[in-house]
Amino acid sequence: MKVLVIGNGGREHALAWKIAQSPRADRVFVAPGNAGTAIDAENVDIPATDVARLLKFVHDNQVDLTVVGPETPLCEGIVDIFTKEGHRAFGPSKAAAQLEGSKVFCKKVLRQADVPTAEYRVFRDAESAALYLNSQREDLPVVVKADGLAAGKGVIVCSNRNEALEAVRRIAIDKEFGAAGKQLVIEERLEGEEASVLAITDGRTLLVLPPAQDHKRAFDGDTGPNTGGMGAYSPTPLLDAASLNKIEEQILVPTVHAMKRSRWPMRGVLYAGIMMTPQGPKVLEYNVRFGDPECQPILMRLKSDLLTILEATVDGRLDEIEPPQWDTRPSVCIVMASEGYPGDYERGRPIRGLDDAAKLPDVKVFHAGTATMGDQVITDGGRVLGVTALGTTIAAAKLQAYKAVKCIRWEGAWCRKDISDKAQGKGV
Ligand code: AMP
Ligand code: GLY
Image (cartoon, rainbow, N blue to C red; front, side):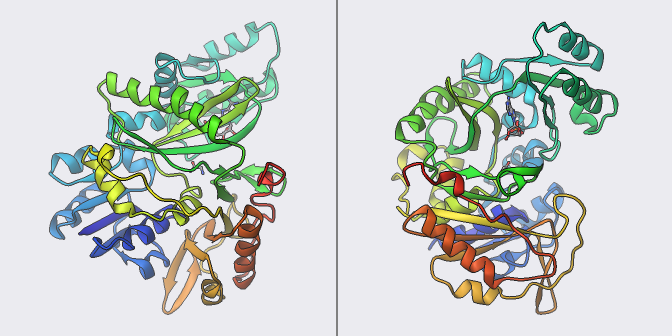
């Protein structure tokens, strides 16, 4: 079989690496890929958003399955276009991708399905949002969200009314997030620990993957600005079997049913951002793709053939395959970033020590923002590498991952030093 993975991050490297292990995968292409996918697969020089050229590539090369990594092409309807042309593609339709592409849509589905989530109101302009905020008797903390895709930046967590009014201004008057801010959601601010629960679904059957925890803030102790994710580990002891069951029964299953009833069946990844509140788990958001970096530690533990799972999903027969086997050992992924990230950073710095890191047992270095120049690997993004390791405990996996991090250097390289510490003292 020939498989195409669309995207160029750590998630896509992990997907391509795992798919390439399948005995049925003859060739694995990644468009556009990075220096890591060039080693584990074959790069194709087409951007992830150039649907017309991607379609032509799939047609000309008789690709049997396309796996879409990032949300933007999904929300633009790449899966509908491919399917219409007779090509199999893993991911949701444009309609179902609204679960991630529109926070208003997501909230409506959650309400219809009676899924626990923060109380919310929708507004179309700054005046009505401000009127609402000013009419509240209590100055309760809220979260203000731009409706559409805003590269993870359209969510502003506020402590009081003034901050909320300022957030409304940024979204609805200054249009900081462009068209994404045409509508806004103001919701109750929830408190608790966050976890990522990813499931794969064909619209009827649900396969819940081991839960993970991301580290979104830039600096140690969850301080500093938000990032795409500075590291992740799986499984997380924050969710025991009972909470995971509850999340499946009260959150994921009703969502999949609600989507099916609405005639927008959800196919692909249903990724719930969960807050463990004192009242139980609540949904913060849905994504319709694998998390990055969560995908890396999760796939590191997958012992079964990923291609079988992806194909069964696309073909709507997820109920027919054997449950996947997981390595019992936990895994930890540390993101190594460029100097300046998540702000401005330079590209093109030569990376050394990748071979030494690769020699360590139970380690895989997933590339994210890298490129090849001659025979050198250079930095080409903010999040550069996802250094991932397995260990008998989370602590051992962490130690091994940082051992690998120590082998790798480039000018200005940095990472958080406390990835997975949140898990310590929680029965691991
Ligand atoms: P989202 O893109 O909706 O996941 O939001 C990004 C981040 O904002 C989440 O990971 C949370 O840390 C935070 N967040 C979103 N909604 C809420 C909420 N209702 N209460 C508290 N924090 C939130
Ligand atoms: N790790 C967060 C995300 O993929 O959205």
